[in-house]
Figure (cartoon, one colour):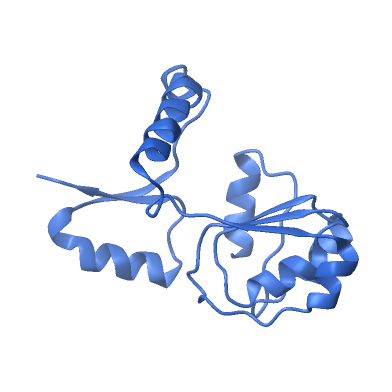
Length: 152
C-alpha cells in the first residue's frame, strides 16, 4: 500500500506490485498484465477495480471487507469478461468444513513452516492488554506484516 512496502515485499519474492492511489489501481495493474485470479481482501470499491483489470474468464475471490460490504459494479463488464466471483468466510462454515480446512493446513502448510520454507512476517508482538493500540497500529498502515497479540 506504499512504495516502501512494495520494496519490502519484493525482497520476499513479489514480482510486481502497484500502489493504489485513492483506491484506483486497475490501469496500473493492466500495464503489468491482467491477472487470472484476484484474491480480494479489502472489498468495497476495490471490487470494481478488480473487475476492470482482471483477465477475461478470470476469478475474483472475495474474503475480506475492510473497505466496506457495498460496491457499485459494471455488470455488463462482468458478463462480457465472463468473470466468476466467489465470496467466502471461515466463520459461517459448518464445523466439518472448518476441520477439513485445518487438516489441509496441517498437511500442506505446517511442514513448510517447520522446514523454514514459509516464514511468517511479524510486524510486532504486543500483550493482549494493548489490543486497542494494536488495532490503531493496523489502522494507521505503518506496519509491515502481522501484529501478534500475546496472551500472558
